[in-house]
Length: 551
Image (cartoon, rainbow, N blue to C red; front, side, top):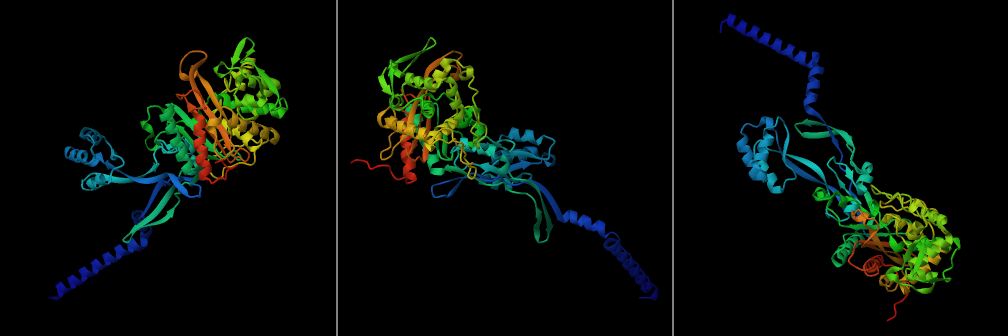
């Protein structure tokens, strides 16, 4: 090589080295901030998302938690129409893999969009097939899931289209259960991804006071009532009358919160215990009588001469079956459920005081139970102030209440005179309620109600080995409540039973309400269901009997 060529190569290499050094200096020193920002933009990422919803649990007698509302991962199949060229071919493949109409898929492919869901909630087999199809994609999502389908549905509620709680505890405790929206920050590198900051928060779990096994039992009891008496609806409440804790709450018909849209009527989504009113009938009579006992207006052993009817300003009130009983005690008025007799009891305290007691027992107020959508009847007809309205209300006709209102009112007699606040989520109990009647009046009423079971029309509610205090009720349903524009009452009835056990140390108050059963009276329908539920609850909780059964 001659010297000229040698120097040329040296100069050329020197110039190239100088350019390279300058380029490196420019990148690493002069523009280091700009290039560093670009690198971080490629390596770091930010996503905004909402945390998972908290779960809901029931419990059993041993305190074990059973999940009844949880979250599960689901997978969707989607496409990006803007990137698809061979539409016919892809549509055919997707149609075969997902069993979706080809025309429906083609219609989505024609949209000016970068994201179109083809099918939600794929099976494992469908996921495998989509993985083999080019231009078809999968994405994960979280969905609310109720593992036992229609179990406890009215208590739980469901998650609506906007991913918000609807009905039940899902809606009432929406702010506690829902996850919090936050930012997830991470970085990508050759080692994979690393989360460096995460402000997304999961919602809180809640545990209900409802017992898993008792709830199953009462739901089955309602299904049996539908089969045995052809009821169109019904509810059962089991609770602790001392503090208002709800142990079971079931209604028929129920619904599957996983598929709530499949119901033909949204009425079935309402919880009848808190969202529907009814005329209670004779189960209301103890409220009237205990008010008179509290006022000292009657004595359990004083007598009344029943002629079978009582006239109130030209209107005639009669007993069930047109019966007359002659001379009876106050105790026997309750045992035989004498309408005319309870009107006599109401008259002893007067209309104004009678209405005050109805208000004291909470029938004009919300109970405040922690379930969404509690309703309240205005009771306009009763509040018109006519004597006949007060007379009818004394035996539970012409006054409207919700089952949860009646549960609370009957608890007053059971617990010795205090008004409790029903609750259904653990930790939501309130301080001891206001005393509205004396323990003496409550004890007297309990003794009368025990007699109603032992010697009266409530005999079918007897639980061997235990004293039961309770009352049957059969009330006619108004034509208007049946959707018929007609005054007065239809032959259809609501049949109910409310009772507590053990009567002199009550641990459980059970209310049974049956809509339009094919049975003459509650003594045949609701009372035996009470007995069946009470026997199970007492045995399940190992409550010792009051007395030995004679063999």
